[in-house]
Length: 322
Ligand SMILES: O=P(O)(O)OC[C@H]1O[C@H](O[C@H]2O[C@H](CO)[C@@H](O)[C@H](O)[C@H]2O)[C@H](O)[C@@H](O)[C@@H]1O
Image (cartoon, rainbow, N blue to C red; front, top):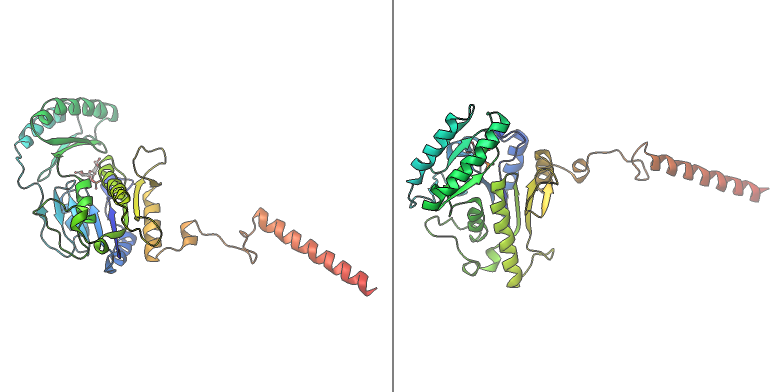
C-alpha cells in the first residue's frame, strides 16, 4: 500500500460562505501536488458551484450528494444517476411548492438531480415545524412510490435517488486502483478487484453534516471488511481510516474522531503539508530554556529551585574552603 487518499466535505461555520479561503487553497494545492495523494471534495452543492470554486484544482469533485463525479484531471462530469427515472422530481416539487407557500422566507433549489427545500431564512420555529411535516408527507407518498431518499440537512430537506449518496462515492474512491481513471459506467469495484498494493493506506474523511455520515459509514465498513479478511496493515499497524466529524463533541455521529471547528480542520490539513507546525497547532507558546512555558507557575518554581540549589552549592563550597 503506498497511496494516501483524502476526502472532504465543504466545511464552514456559515454555509453561505462555503468558499475556499486562500489558506485552504494553498493547503489543498500542496496536498494535491503529491502524486501519492488523491484529494476529493464530496458535496451536496451543484456542479457549477464546485467548478467555480474548485474546478481549476488537481482534485476530484462530487456534486449533488454523489449524483455527479468529476475525476482528478478530468474536465467532464459523469452523471451517476443518468439511467434513473426522474419522474419523482415533479411530485417532490409539488410538495415543496405547497410548503414554500405556507412558510415565508423558504425556497426551492432545483439542482439537476437533487431537489432541496431551504428554510434557513424562514422563522426558525415555523421552518422546523413545517420541515417535520414535509418530511412526513414525502415519506408517506413519494418515497413509497420511488426509490428516493429524503434527507434532513442544515435548515433544508433534500431528495435524491437512494442509490447515489456520498458513501457510495467514498466506496468508489477507496476501491479504485491508485492512478486508474474512475469507471463511472459500472458499479464500484469490490475489494477483490483491486491489487492490495493499489489500495490506499491513509483515508481521512472530514464532514460536518448529517449527509456526511454516509461517508463515515462506508469507510468504517471497508475497515471492518479488511480486518475480517486480515489484509496487511500499514506501517503503523492500522488501515489508516480516519472518519472525522466537524462540530461540537456532543454531536451525534458515527465518526471515530472529531474536530471542533473549521479552523481546526485547516490546522490538521496544514500539519499534513507542513504549513502548520505542531507547536502552532496546539496554540503557540514561548518556552523558557528549561522547557517550561515562559512566566508560568512551573517556570517560576523551576527558577526558584535552581536558585536555591545554586545557593546551597555556593554555601557548601564556601564551607569546604574555610
Ligand atoms: O454537502 P454540503 O457541501 O455540506 O452541501 C450541502 C448543501 O449546501 C447548500 O446548502 C447550504 O448552504 C445554504 C446557503 O448557501 C444554506 O441555506 C443551507 O442551509 C446549507 O445546507 C446547497 O444549497 C445545498 O444544495 C447542498 O445540498
